[in-house]
Image (cartoon, rainbow, N blue to C red; front, side, top):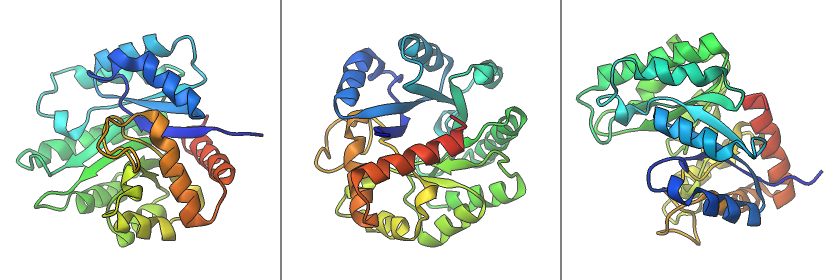
Length: 261
């Protein structure tokens, strides 16, 4: 069976991209992408994503959750309203959730509380989680790992766009987690991600773009989009000594295992 590429993490229902949704999907299909998981961080993004994908539900899944950078601006009841969509058949994941100390660590206790609550909701619904982690002066990854050790994600999960240490990647694998590999893998200064990939079990990785951010080489500096995920996938094949079709097949199996698709 011939498989296409998968973009397991794309913000194409967000403001600035949703207006180009049809063009982005057309570009993706022309590059052999056959599955995209759309990350939705608000009710509007969920509603827009469901409306845009209703004619091609096989190609699109959704992840829903409150991003740590949005915790301060979230209104009472937002989380409950969003999580009501977890029973929708296209919603496969709670995310992206987590901790971000890069932009602001003054509300880290609030971030932790919302992260833990969303982990609990994911467990209640039997959904995996997609986790965002960004360190600042304080170590967000260590806090995430400690929370996951004390509040296990029973349906597993993925740390998206992983760029932390080899040692912490090993801790995540021991917890049953996957890592998302994005455009940083192809960057000249992305050696740490290549080091992680070298030790990562091939059945614990997923390809992603994090569109519109972090476009891979040779598209670096441009607005990222799902069509560009093939460059990351091809780099994985180069580093793991696999053909593109072998990478596609393995990523499909990993995606199916994690998201129960």
